[in-house]
Image 1 (tube, rainbow, N blue to C red):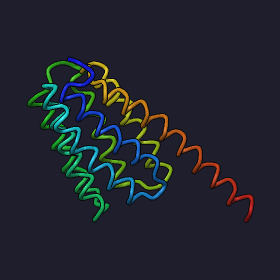
Image 2 (image 1 turned 135 degrees about the vertical axis):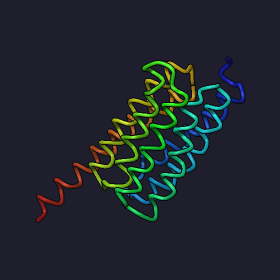
Image 3 (image 1 turned 120 degrees about the horizontal axis):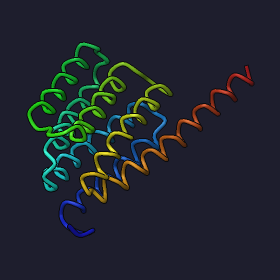
Length: 170
């Protein structure tokens, strides 16, 4: 596969939206951009033939969309079950479960967490997706998850610094 195949080009689109998402300090903006990033990932992984990742990305897209309206732990459980079902149907081997596990972490994060803790748990999800993308040969996905991890760490550090400044001023 070349760096400019249709599959990789769609991966680059996901890259742009994913990096834009984790730059957001506003949780709602983060989730909105994650919806578009997840949708791009669905097509990207279908084109790569990685159906566990595509299925998890589809569930993630719907999950991120609904998490804009509710913070229901029950709905989180439904999405975790959906991801596990996708893994059971499509995953062949331990590494095929990486996107499923990453999506489960992200599900807990977007439905039950906020602020700094939300971003830390999303960082763990990112690391599972990074491993998946390396193994899938997803150039855009590798770049996406690497940049998301770096930008997310930077945003986490900015938020920690902001907390410290607010505490010092109080």
